[in-house]
Length: 440
Image 1 (tube, helix red, strand yellow):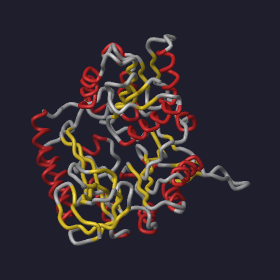
Image 2 (cartoon, rainbow, N blue to C red):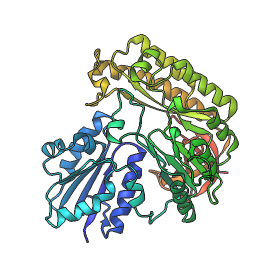
Image 3 (tube, one colour):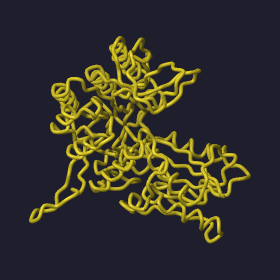
Image 4 (tube, rainbow, N blue to C red):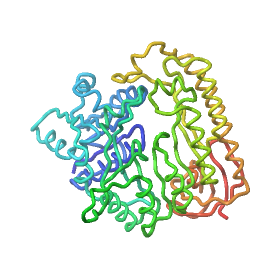
């Protein structure tokens, strides 16, 4: 029996895809290996959003390949964007497959193992095929991700996703509800609905009224229906685009108890000039007004965000606008990155590219502000009780780490196994990146 090992880079959509690949290969008779030394097949599922991921892939293949390796397969966004160039850059690669073709991986592996083909490349955009052809998950976890939408039509000037994941499309409602029901029936209690731009979801309705045109559901209706399914204790979704946030979605948060009072709304910059050059479709004032309205409708809502510093043409004043927005928005969690030019995107050819030294300096200043806001919120929870779902063990003995409804890490000590358990936790202290408590 041939064994496989998957190394995953990048976003949660890549994690979702890698889990599907694991199910596909397991159903096809392959055995998952816990380490690269014993694996016959090495699979690298990649991200191409930032430059570091490409460099890391090149390094990891050279480091992890052993004399036992029979096949090296590279999938995901790098494989999609590099195409045949991947084979010339990394001659040891046997299979290159895009994000929409992983359902064919077992077939391609068999063809290489049998000697039928030495190298295989597939960057076809099959859209729905991978969802309909993948088997049901064998080992259901207490927390599961369900992809409801993929691709993107926004074409932000810095982003490679529309070129690697394709144009936006949404799964039919019935397919999503059937998958969620199956997961809940087999032990899942938390569901995360996932997509590149999840709040632009517009899937075919599960039924058609006689004499009426074909109907679609948006994310608001889908969340309401998923929330009614038996066994569901916590519902999340990600990732959103600010311009697609509606009053209806805000009201769903306020009216749906299992939907967490937390959402990720990436802003990227606080400068209207830079937002326009990024093709984001909103101004800083419009963005902040949505956060304010959201807090008015749903007072306990909290936000996380993404920032890019050093975008081409960003001046000191543009950066100060970003700092001002970060302070006004008061994020619970934030993620910030240096701009990384990606070949094939418009921004890579923009004039006035910012030096790495300036990017580093600005990133350090922004992260200091974001961490201060994050710690303020963490401190505000001290003395309060939070419902926590525990996901993993900590670094120390009897230590467990879980997530509250705000997606914060909560750390406790317990002699009992907490993995997969919902527990009420009294928060005793706070640090920059987590809060610490005890079972209430």
